[in-house]
Amino acid sequence: MKSQIAPAPAKLETVRFEKPTVEDGAAMWELVNQSTLDQNSAYKYIMMAEFFAETCVVAKENDKLVGFVTAFIPPERKDVVFVWQIGVDSSQRGKGLASKLLEELVQRHKGTNVEYVEATVTPSNKASQALFRRLARTHNTECEVTECFPEELFPGDHHEEELTFRIGPIK
Image (tube, rainbow, N blue to C red; front, top):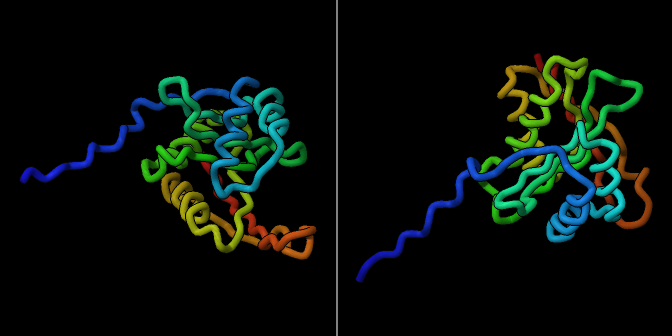
């Protein structure tokens, strides 16, 4: 009896990274709705693609959106790119796509005033915590974690506190 060997997962070399277009908004929204990420309206993703394309990245494989990062530069802190959300299609998990998306975002801002990447992460989201700590190690820089939004600020259902992860300075 022959043993069956599972096919190797597709390599990330087949994935391309680009600025999002408004047409990508629906696919970003669908990816989020098929995941455990906080759900936002479809309008949010269309708006991010239209008004924040310079600070957002989509990953596509064979023209199918398989990942994204939405981010923006806070008006009062021009040296920061704030990551709002990172989504990765289940077909791409475990391949390092989230790290590649963040690296694409960082590389896009080389030579600008941006020196820090920030994001808020809940205490139970160990995968995102590891992702941002890995970004700091990759760039041989600091990852400072501070309190941001306590859980009592969030209405309705239980929502954990959000901690700020600040990575940088990134040169």
